[in-house]
Amino acid sequence: MSAKLKISNLILLLLMSFAANASDFSPYVDADGNISLPDSFRTQMAHIGSWFVPDGDASGFHDVFTEKESLEAYRKTKDFPDGATLVKEVRAHRSGNFTTGANISYSESTKLWFVMVRDTQNRFPHNKVWAEGWGWALINIDNPKKNVATDFANDCKGCHLPAQKSNWVFVEGYPTLHE
Ligand code: HEC
Image (cartoon, rainbow, N blue to C red):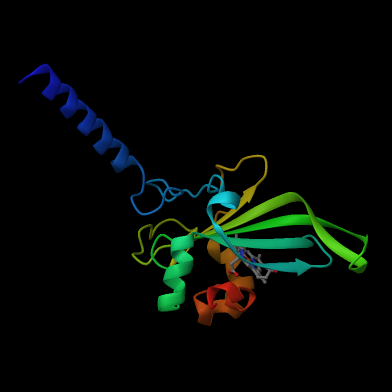
C-alpha cells in the first residue's frame, strides 16, 4: 500500500469516527441526544415571528427562528421536517416615546433561549428531553452548550399542551410559515 493511500485511509477512518460520535441528523445534537444552541442562528436562520410578553419572568420579546430549508419545507408539507430546529430567544425589553408614538417597546439583552429539534425517528427513547417528536432544551446565557432542562414532562409539557394539535408548536404566532 502506498504512503498516500495509507494517509487517505487514515483520514477516512477519522471522518467515520467523527460521524459515529455526532448524531447525523442535526449539528446541534450529540450521539447521546444532548442539545446545544445553534451558532450564529441570528444571521443563518430565518426569523419566523415574535411574541411580546408585557410582565413576569418571561417578559420581553420572544423571537423565533428556524432554518430557511425548514421554513420552505413547512410551507409545502405543513410540518417541520426531521432535524428542523426552532430557536426562541427571550430578550428583555425597554419602552419609551418615539416619533411613532408613546410607550413603544424594543428589545434589549438576551435572557435565555429555548430550543426544539424535530425527531421523527424516536432516536433517544431513554432520554427524557426527547418526547413527542422533538428534543426540548432550555439554555442559559452563561453556557450555550448546556441544556439545563432535564425532563420534557416536568419542564415543558404542561405549557405546550395547548399546541399539541399543531405538533406542540404555537404556529399561530408565525405567519411567515404560511406566506
Ligand atoms: C410557562 C409556560 C411554558 C413553559 C414552561 C415552556 N414553554 Fe415553550 N412556549 C410557551 C408559549 C406560550 C410559547 C409561545 C408564546 C410565547 O413565547 O410567549 C412557547 C414557545 C416556544 C418555542 C417557540 C416555538 C413554539 O413552540 O411556538 C420554543 C422553541 C419553546 N417554547 C420551547 C420550550 C422548551 C424546550 C421548554 C421546556 C424546556 C418550554 N418551551 C417550556 C410556553 C411555555
